[in-house]
Image (tube, rainbow, N blue to C red; front, side):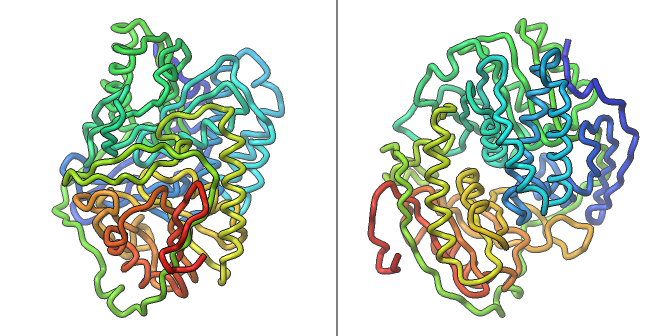
Length: 477
């Protein structure tokens, strides 16, 4: 039987209708809302330029398409961690009053961003541990930080890895599957230690949104064929499975002899009417009239271990610059968290000292979300955070619409892939800090910095993380 913490809550019948664009309407019916959060605190809507899915829930708590307080996406993962803790300790101490207090803090922090920092630190201070070890897997690209922040809420007995779309020919993927509805379907999983998945621990699959559940089903099938175990948990911010999609989990349980639990911040159903004819676009005039500001390149020593492997792009070109070993892409365990925390503190202090204005935006790039998010959280007041994305979204300037502006450019990691920066207006931020996990050729990053030079009010900081002292290509440190 498919067991879910959501069964503990009375179903909701709140219905929300979104007229997204001409000839596209989405109706959302809540069926469970364990934190009793208003939907407008969780997401807005936009039209997605994708033949497989015409709409997008633009999350307000994820840090992807909308600039947010950096503690908000950290707290969203931690809130899912609380639900997991409660689910796996149903007959134990999770029922005590202090757990209710933590849940309330999480909810208030998500609804009121100014309370997110205090709520997040309160959750970390609780030093939660689960009754047995677990493995977290975050889905690329959008849920890499969500999965990491969910994992990080636990003080011990946890491990984490996120899937990736990057081709790393030096390593063998231990898990491979497809996300059928996505614009980028292939997922790979480069666990340096195959023992990470070879035990019997429950696996927690973390995604920002579950619509059909097919991605989780494909993942479970592949893992179970190589690393069989008894229990899986599928965690997400939003869960829109109904009818047959829910039955698929139950059928898979019976077929494989496993148990699958589900938990989320909001569960419901969606009904879509219409199919708009949209094309990717950007507001060229908006940027054409903006003045350009300087770009300063800074190499920041983080003292983190590097993994000397290469990546290959769609053209077959090789980048030999090493990866950060403990980013989450290659697998980490709870014992690694102290080193990560120390590195984050060092980098945040360095970048905080470089700030010149009261408003700054810190940006992650693609899958590299969690470390930039953590660094942003330590850079002081007036900081917003978001990541670039490869998801093509139609922009419209309406108060009730989720994406007001868009800027497109070829990815520095793979020029065949178009990346986007959404919802950043010229001069909105005094400075923009872009954090890169590894070196890329200057000509590859230039299309992105050309855009950022017109978005930032005073300066663009291109921050390259490095494990040792290094020059700055003449840019100054």
